[in-house]
Amino acid sequence: MKKATEILSEEHKNILKVTEALFKECHAMEEGKKLDEDFFKKAIEFIRNYADKFHHAKEEDILFYELRKDSVEMHCNPTDQMLHEHDLGRNYIKELEEGLKKKNTQKIIENAKGYAGLLQEHIFKEDNILYPMADDVLDGKVQKLMLERFVEAEKKNFAKGTKEKYLSIAKEFEKRS
Image 1 (cartoon, rainbow, N blue to C red):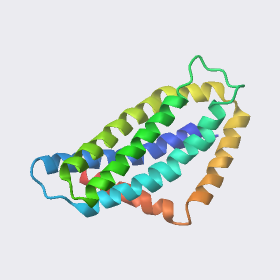
Image 2 (image 1 turned 180 degrees about the vertical axis):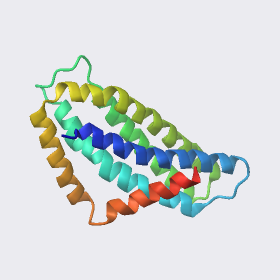
Image 3 (image 1 turned 60 degrees about the vertical axis):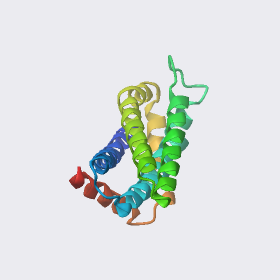
Image 4 (image 1 turned 120 degrees about the vertical axis):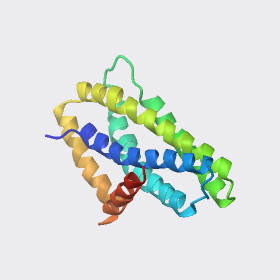
């Protein structure tokens, strides 16, 4: 049986494709490339819908919910820090969008790089620290329940074909990096 954390790690790979493209685009702009508004609008759309509404919702509402139960015993529980980092990421995207509206390239670069760096570190911590801890403390019954709730969340948050739309954006951005 596949574990919920394996699904989340697979989704991370798509998010990392976008963070790499953000770094590359920012570097090109620092070297004199003209602002590509469509690129950043598409990145924001991907981040808000795939990374946040689709992926972070599963983490926050399902995995972190289970990990924060009193019955779950871990020597330390990093879920509060992960939630804080999700909020930091949302703020970077809000500021990135504001910079884009004002065509403020410095603000765009600063927030796009801030988001990309934060998410790369965040994903490393989840994949290598939090998820293995979760797999150690959550039994098979809870794992199965989380998988069922993932399917429900996916149906609730994404109409048919929407997930594929965002996966194609990630693939397109991967080609840019």
